[in-house]
Image 1: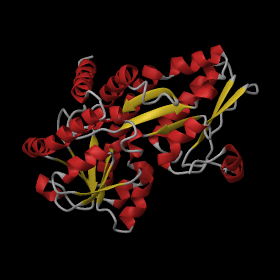
Image 2: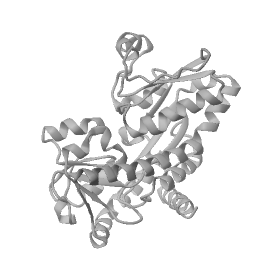
Image 3: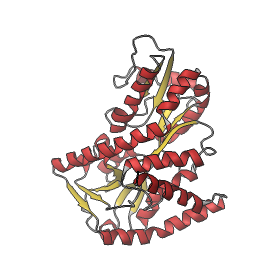
Length: 349
């Protein structure tokens, strides 16, 4: 069930006063105030390094006309899978979310989430994804103003037990990030469990999970490095998986802005925003990996032989996706070719 504006007013009074809320305070009163809603805490890298700097840039470039208030940790109510509809319905003006939180709803976005197609570098995946979105995602996202679409860097296996070889994954209860990554994990014997990332800490504490597959960037936000001691990377290009993100805005709210304000929004989103996102994931990932290593946790890397075996085991996942897309009259081979071409373009840039 989606929150109405009336319900929002009743349920978010405490959130509006919450000390974690970051507000823009320009020198003069803003003419427009927009609410940005997301699911991670304010100390998360994506909040502190990407979303908050963007709101400040919008305020500066608009001459103080626009203030964007960030509501982290689902402070406006609802659950992470509801964020896209909150933007569509106007419960929030802007949201940051994952299309993968509503599996099957945005089938064309899944091409970057196919096993062993993405780059390990966030900047490559982010730029390629935005370019791809401009060409292919208009119809699927027509009920919002899609401000940016990007994908993160390489995912990592974080587990209570050592994952040194592919056989060590057998029977492990791991949180999977996207449905396709989940299928590729199942292909090598993982008991894959899907859930939004904020649920991971409690699920680990309760023994529902043995670990999780996420990029380095998000590890501190959910204290994953304190809950598990072993972290296994997948070598080289392509990497095992990436997940994609939306920065989406309510279309009526966007159209109601003055032309000069819309210009500021346009100039700071799209490829500009995706590029910043790619940089954030790459830099934050490197910083977090060093922090985890300095803490004394063990970082491992699968062998190229095990990676090759995993790639072979995952081929039916891609084949099944292609057949599924063709059943929806979507030219999956063409989308895969487009994604691979764009990834190669930005890998060599």
